[in-house]
Image (cartoon, rainbow, N blue to C red; front, side, top):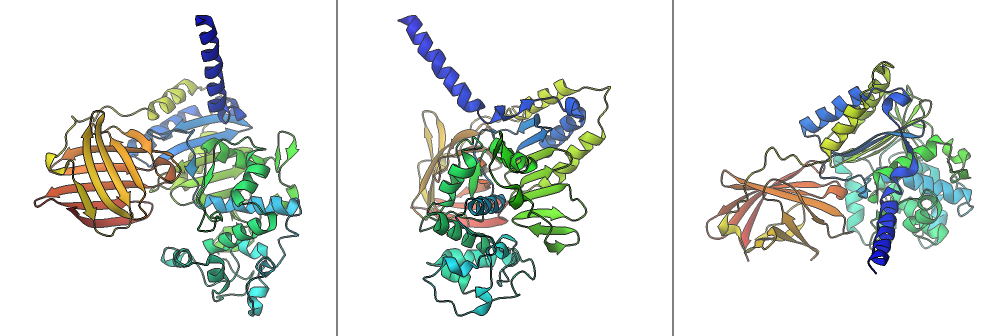
Amino acid sequence: MLCKNCLWISLFLLHVSAVLAQSQNTWKTSSPEEQGMSSLLLANAIKQIKHDGTNIHSLLVIKNNHLVLDASFYPFKSTYAHDLASVTKSITSLLIGIAIDKKFISSENEPIVNFFPEYKINNDTLKSVRIKDLLNMSSGFQCSWDDGERELGEMRKTTDWVKFMLTLRFANNPDAQFSYCSGNFYLLAEILQRATKMSCHGFAQKYLFKPLDFGASYWLTNYKGVNHGWGDLHISIYDFAKIGCLILNGGEWNGKQIISKQWLNKIQPLHKIQKTEFYGYGWWLDSESPDLVQAIGRGGQRLFIFKTRNMVIATDGGGGYDSGKLDDIVLQAIEKYDKNENNYALLQKTTKNISLPDTSTTTPEAFPQNGLNKTFLLDNNEMGLRSMRFEKRKTGYYMTVRFADSSVEDNPIGMNNQYKISKEHTFGLPMATKGKWANDTLFIDYNRLCRIENYKFSIIFKENDAMEIRLTEASKDINQIIRAKKM
């Protein structure tokens, strides 16, 4: 009986190991030196990133179809599904290409009004907008990234997002000029769903994610179940890098053509943004660096595809850092390669160290007693919090927050300045919370690892059961004072 149980345990562990290794084992592992790169330079760069407190989550480098760097920074793990932010636009573009390949959509030259027959269209300029104008951010709509993408925010407040977009004024004729507009990619999501009779996520899972052997993925939808074509797709860093390798390999994966070369060849520097920076079919390009294709998202989400170097760099983060410098680091590692040096062991040690908690600054557990076991009602705030409560339980301190939409997150707090992992309320993805008490102020890091956001609270408990909170979040440029009183 004991041996039988051992067999079942062994089989279970093998299954778990296979699931965990599914994405990582896509590529053979190699030292950077074997691919003409310097481990020493990469190790030193990672140490510096860690020392500077840069809010990067993970970094992957694939060279010559070999995994040469796999770094995740505590408390993030590379197996977590991560919000890609506007990198989602580049993947939505691929989905449109696949839909055209498979004849769900006739071509990118089809007028967009053909997909919205229930709307009466009298505007001749609108009738001339094609799918490719949406893909190229050249629809001509009076819509831009000025004022924090004001039009996107206004669209999301309406009860009919399609109507909002189709009734926007025109600042330019279609195909005339680049103007960043996330609403373009919402219309593409609508078009894809209407043409295929599948959600964008469902279509992606069938025709892109499953063929590439993706792990778990998540994608936010709106009030009628249409995925946010402009953002909010969550996949792991390994699956993120697969997208880059798919493009690098001309749309082929394991001997199967997933997306046509004809579609990928359309990714060209078509519409100028500034100087040498261009945009084309959902991707960022540089006329002076024809070797490089990029996908870029808020908070440091980035995919670099170097065609002639046969290299892909994928990185994700929590905001507040310039991921555009990471490609320079990797390119320097190629330039500094010395065939007589091999520091791969140092690089492996460094990547292991950054994945572990820093125990050098731990503080004793402490908490202001006048803040425990009370529910505080918060003023209106940019995080959408309604109330906050702190408790001490058998397993430690907890922070419970209720949002304006009535959703709740109940999170353990590592009060020794070490993160404790829990789950955020939208997809149940890992998040991390830690705190410390210093100078009559409670400092809490409320780190939604997979959702980009890293909220920081500085809380002062006042007399008369009142509380004052300073809330900051770098990627959303939040810096706000919030007052709260006991309910």
